[in-house]
Amino acid sequence: MIQVSIPGRVVLELHHLLLDMNGTLTVDGVLPEGVKERLEYLKSKLNVYLLTADTFGSGAQVAAELGIEVFVVSPVNGGKDKRDFLAALEPRGVVAVGNGANDAEMLAAAELSIAVIGREGCATAALHQADIAVTHINDALDLLVNPLRLVATLRI
Image (cartoon, rainbow, N blue to C red; front, side, top):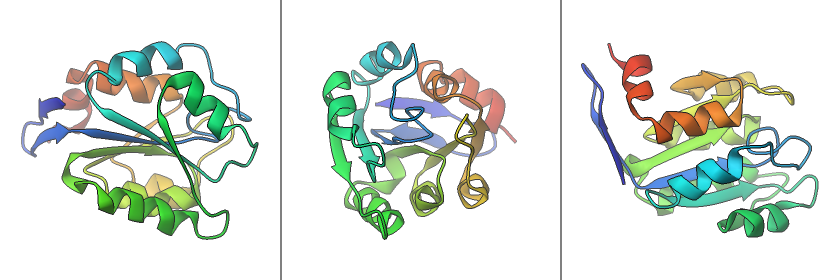
């Protein structure tokens, strides 16, 4: 668990990390440097899940490389699938990271949501549902590795 008190807001008790794959965790289906090491640390604090429509067909390979579970969503109704996956957990303990239109419902339902505006862009629907926006997946993961960054960004 990661616990952090946000002045003027809430105490976050995070238990689960939901990661979109394409455009968020990977670029063109490939992991950027540094992601694996950050996730190795975060797996000791959070249950980590990869949620993907698997556009590039590398979801199972990426999940295996990271040692996390993969959940393949519908290429048509993936947004609902991601929201339903989150709802099966305790939404108050979920941090979600995404960039696509099919991530918007998941980001809206999560206790903490982070949009990644990377090389593949970010759908405005996802951006509008995010608590925080960053420009690289490593920056998103570093917010969880160093939770005082969340305090600096989210305090009122």
